[in-house]
View 1 (cartoon, rainbow, N blue to C red):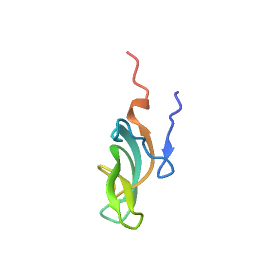
View 2 (cartoon, rainbow, N blue to C red):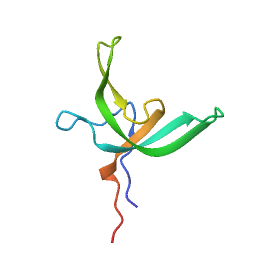
View 3 (cartoon, one colour):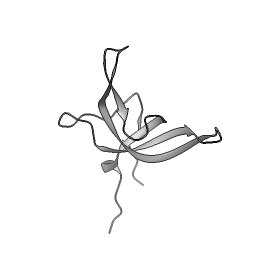
Length: 86
């Protein structure tokens, strides 16, 4: 079995390519459901390195497009996943 190169977030974030960081990623998230129970899931998302301006840092900070309100723990580029052999 191929070992996947999962990266810990926020220690590592997706890199920019051609000025933007919009490569598809697979992410591990933690969130509270409607009953306040901690849940985990593996989903897809895109990371925008300069999504919003943080006045405290006086700089732009990154944001996940679909799961920014969830706790993202790890991520991997989708293109790094091994594809099935025909």
